[in-house]
Length: 513
Picture (cartoon, rainbow, N blue to C red):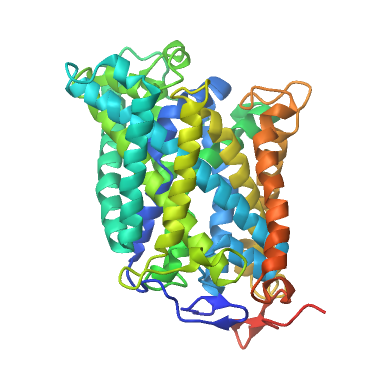
């Protein structure tokens, strides 16, 4: 494999302006796992999954895990050849098509900005809830549910994490270490305690553990399979942040890809353990009656107050962590696009001392803050806004993940038959993952006679926000093409060839005829 250590811009390697050789493999793995926000994901969606597929939720998680894992493998191979902080955007542009690549970058950016608007609102809600639990005399229940206080608390968290991302990648990574420790220690602790209580007969369990909980064949029908795959996009989204910080990572061509794959298995372990613990300890009816916040209800039934307040802290730290690690790839993605000359120059401005794309980071945060303000002024504001947006975000993610899988198979097409490993991991699995994720997006967006259980709708309004966001990208793409300051849109795409046992780039930077 090639060991490229510098980003490739228009067919040539360039010295990165970011703070290189800063993050270790452990740092990037922490960033990748915290980006997924397992505590919040479990709190918001575990009960939905169990309600949809019953006690086969572990099987559904496994079914959905593999397509996303196949994309993580594609990221590993593509990053080996081109450790560019634009990640998917850069790889798709260079190997598949620059127009598709630009649009893929826009889709990722739209998903990130939406999330950075929704997640702080959730963080604000949990901050007020935690303060109400600790200081009920000062923070009343009316304050906890007041949209103005929720938005103010959320905006404060957004400002804090924005400052850290601007200040430097090292301080961001250190903050992630703290938040991940809090989140994982609490979630894993409660899960292990629940299983121990069930095993020792100290819990009135309704569901006895069975091996077929993990069998995909127990799902019964295609609808349940699609539910598992759809939720897995939401469960596992975020690990690709490791690729967006590749230019700031030691061993830039290998560590980010490995971090993405390692984080997938770490997250799979946490999700499976927590799902098993929840459905062993709680009855099916209890799970169905507490779908909006099953993790907190689970902790209340397990330990009662005040220890159950720890779960509020876990979800809060999880949400703050993922807000920061979603803003992080947004700033690196737009930096890469500006460096390519297809995005406004401001996004490519790097701070002289901190070596971060500080202007682009602040602009992305302001856009998210604007959405928070619009949401606050909306008459339909409520603290379940995150739950309403998660489906739209997941479809956007499925689209750009799927495109990346196709790009990997296409980029390595000339060397797929040279070794079994390349055929399987650089070609077949990424292509299969891309097809499955595109099918998930199609199944959620396109209405059917019955509608998917997860989508809970059978009309075009379900996917309208996604279609509008993608549609907005088309005129922006045209503007980028007209205003392009480089040969980005006219460069010939590249493929990878085997030269003396080493992978190399064929015909880089050649203008399209």
